[in-house]
Length: 472
Image (cartoon, rainbow, N blue to C red):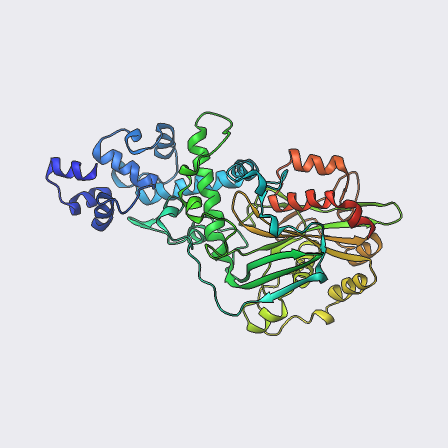
């Protein structure tokens, strides 16, 4: 199309590039078929310069109209469209849509995968070898460290991810999805911290093993949030004036398609969070309650606007110091740090210390560890899985804590923390009383509330094994 336009008007690539506001090399790559064009801002400029309707370059007239009118800052000098601003506004619109529709999008994404990989009713996927036959105590899981780095085939910079990486200057896109987030829509918590990378997981006879290496947190977001954003754009395009979309085709998802086998740690870095359902057990009644967390979109970059179990956090060292990589390489220690931050509102362990955490000298850790030794606190792993929408990895766990220990250790549970709001059942109860762990509440949350997939998975599997969890 561009070559024909130039030929008819005897234009050079450089002169056409000047009209389109991009580099000559960009036009050259498009004409040779080396650069697929998915940037709406650039496509709108092509329509204007070539005087052709949006449909001829694959744009719906509705989307073109929305972007062309009524948006702040989209018109440059002389009334011309500024391709950078249009591109970034389109990206922001897709990001907002992703954050506002994560629950529906996750269910839509789950339909892309084989039924045998789905963990219904939660929109999670997992191979059978990632899931134990029943909950496994944390102390029965062996963690192994892989010293050498393991390369990946996909890192988020590939051409297939172009449509979710907006222009930063004419003809130049952000190189990674996280770069766009940092400069265009940064949440309050957004740090590229060292994180443990899952390389293998297996279960046998009530015991487990996990192998890890090291990566960075943004290695995760450059793929997980990007594939979620990509699916959001596909749904926006499909929906048009319709309120629902029943399915998305793989052909509409080039970046997700490039990743291929979502469970292959050599294709991409699998960087897990640890999601923990906290059950406050009343032994004398044989009942329990649990805590729920609403994740504030202004504060967090993932699972925003959703309810999740609490605590939940990335499995990562508390700093980039080499001694913390060793000192913090423990599932239970990671969970206790998150309990401290999310339930008690203590400052995040952000790597600002110069010495390792003295876990055995930490009052909270020591109290929980003592109760664990007495059988008043138990921690189980329910397996590992991926969020179908973002392909983000999570290790699902459940913490069962007797009510007397909980009321002593967490007597000052905060309602608002650095990531969102802790939800209670209301009726004059304190935050720490939580929500009754009953079939009605579990089914309501799984079926009618916007739950984060990892939290939904924890809740569903914990309810399945509730007798074992509450009586052991």
